[in-house]
Length: 573
Image 1 (cartoon, one colour):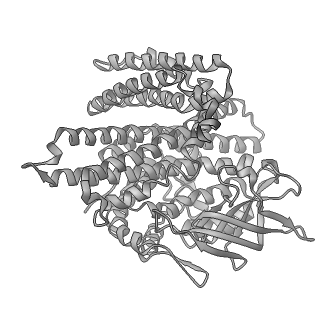
Image 2 (tube, helix red, strand yellow):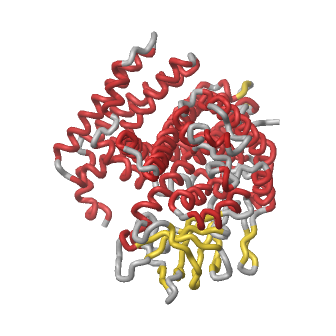
């Protein structure tokens, strides 16, 4: 009986070494929640015990209920009949089981029926659900919609929408993308108009909407007539009633259990969330950061599933009188996959903790302001946490989604021809992984989002402190490698900046972002190796590879390899 929490020692390691004491205290309002709710934790250890119990429940549902249904869900797919979308049977059953376990409002406050958990714990749940069935995550993982309404909506909107989202009676969708507005959301055209009474109505079309059949929709719409940029956009909540027509569901390469819809809004009654004109520049950007973190967890879950399938097949498949697991070329692939999985997991949960800290400090600031108290100290910490979050979130999505595709590719390769057949799960996992580095912002857009913080060397003080830290034994040599990576990064950055060529900086951005990620993750792994000797191997393999990759990246940048892009029009004509 597999449990996707307890059977994953690295996930358990991450949980047991979380540094979220301050975050939990903020979430629990210094544990005053226990005075209102008997089941709320009384202290930090009590909270951790609660989190672990819930993660074990998620792991059991994922491993023993969701995973066995995933292949059938992929075949059956979500269907549309007479204008209505129907989930595959396995999807409906899984959502019912998750609702019964009260897991559909993990981060929502208890007053609305939620568990009041930190985002970090929620990401662990998403990873496990995604390992079982990536398409189910696209429904389970949309709890950020409820969180956005809670964060920016008014009390009436929270009472109207949140309880039924938390109970699982309703599911949600983010209706952002349009036929001519994908990554460029400033181009959104769907209109929000007010009638004589001041009530809002939505008119227009949205495309590629994940779970567009959901009962609660968050819609980005143009509320300011005559505008053409992001300053004319506002965010609205509406019910998926008869005025919202599902025109079609897309037939996709993967994640078949998740309906991707084209929606037409026909004077749909809607409610403004927050203030006008802040839809894109504040609310959607906040929502997208959460969504990108969720997709990172989804990618990690898929990659974990692919690794497990490859390991199992390699141990069972015999060639030339031995299991292929013992063939060095195959063993090396498996080791690389494992190192990538563990380093990615370290990055994901480090980033999640920064996201949590940023969000909880922001909430604390609002509460203190309401009491007329000073917030200068909290504001300074919030600004720092927000900057780091804005850097690490796109880096995490870029690294984890690209890695997931590579791990799935290698896992299929280990299966040989058998992996190309639908009888083996790896075929589905390869298809499911492919979307992760596309939706919620392509890898290229993540690099664009991260490069500002990288060029400004936002983590410079952090790296300075790590270089001064006294690591034990063989880890000291790995620090020297990281110092060399940093020197290579600085030389490369100086070369790029000195050119004073914006286009050159843009095309060199990927290489710079990668080098920065090697530094940050490398030190995460060193800290973990101080706690667990098994992590020394992971840290060594990752950092040595990062050094080699950094040298190649620097050579690519400083050899003027990108100069020919100035003549791209002639080359591509």
